[in-house]
Image (cartoon, rainbow, N blue to C red; front, side, top):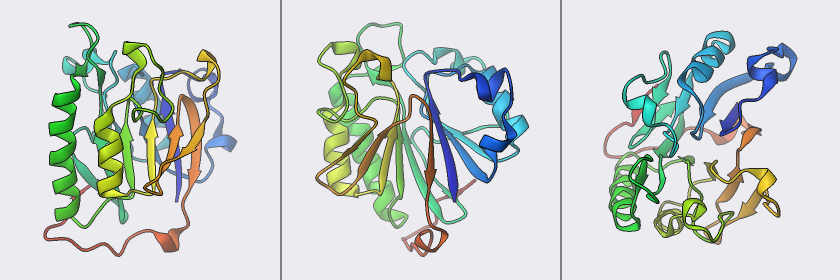
Length: 213
């Protein structure tokens, strides 16, 4: 399964000059936030594959106009062809105007999602907007990661955590880092292609099924 993950930066090859060759074989698009609804709608229309998304800290407009034709995974565990995907959007709340949470609020959200993941048989991907604290974040409050995500990865142990929020041009930002849980953390600002072998997807049990895409 080929996944195109996008975040924060509107890339011309997806919007101004649709590049069919670069999109060849993409089965799923995932937005890690801070992208206009019209941008996501453009992509999902031309790609003709499902687009899953979480809200970024600047995506307060989604509350009035959510991206049409796209599927929110914020606060959900979704199943796409056997791939289990969990979403937790938002950043640290550094002012009242952003889509943000305190550390305590995110800790409660993450704890609920960990229980949901366990009940549905686990997850393959965790999709967030902000990074985990200490893994690709910065020291200033707006770009600080959540300690709650560090604990979530240790508990849930997904294969990947995909996030945005920390732009690559901020300097000394690693695109891919490894978490002690075994999870690979990927900064998806701009775009990132992820290939998962089909034979490694599916086969999860659980007390009840995840919501299908």
